[in-house]
Length: 384
Image 1 (cartoon, rainbow, N blue to C red):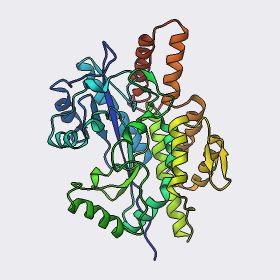
Image 2: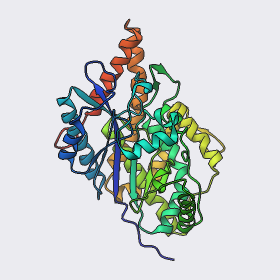
Image 3: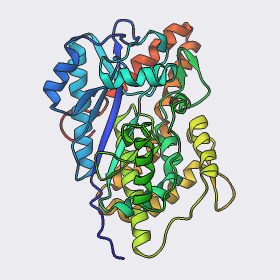
Image 4: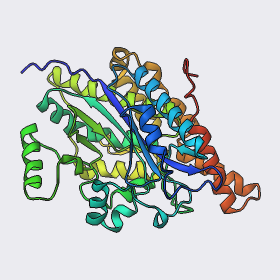
């Protein structure tokens, strides 16, 4: 059966933490006017999150990677400008270096009251932020076909995004501690595979009819068919501190999705591997970022991440040219050269300690770096 090529339009959602500029700690209660001011300025593109110290933004449906970049830049600038009026600053990091989750208050909304009652301490610990990328795949069964193949690449994307090496003032030893926290929630991790969209829908319906879920928005896999849009929503990534890193990962995700579509169009497909095996790479990316490589299942050995990236760039070159985002996906080499946010946070922290600063001072230095990097290259006009 010939299926028309998807539009592959995209949307990006990012979650930020709100920092008190005086203390560098997170706010416990957002100022009463902050969210209303954001909503007035951003008209449906901003919303509260579970905790009052969090804010989520979302782009419109974007026809190009360039449009998505402009959208995220504008949204970051606007949130920062409004936050600044309240002596606050947003940071695009998946954990705060030293904030205590015990001291945070959840947002006063019925949905969040229900979550707090249902999930108890598990959801109270969700002092984490992520980046979600939606890619449109309009045909339902094609959507599920790509959904079944994409998990192989999720560790590759996670490794490029890591921004959560600290938790409550401690080095965790992980580049993405966010996933360790998030995996305590039910219905998280790598997704199940399904034979068709109908099978997926029947599974969701069974849980809904049993009273276990309101809808599929309560399924929090690393990748999921969106409940609201005809998209595949990639959720494995930490939120990237640098805008350009976020756009690189989004562009790679779009290009990988189209590459898999091309394989199907040509009566081919990506080789299937068990979730057990893919979870090994997920753990390696969570623990080491890209420093220790990932397993190449075809070769049966750990391969340097740089080699895997070059293969991925070659596989998706045609797609990057199609979407006019060659520069954006090749930014991956810059990420490998200068490190992810997690790498830079650890570098700043250790440099501060070596300079004779206390642990508390070093952690505040890390926050200062996050504040600065969150707004890097977001100025209006051509990308810098």
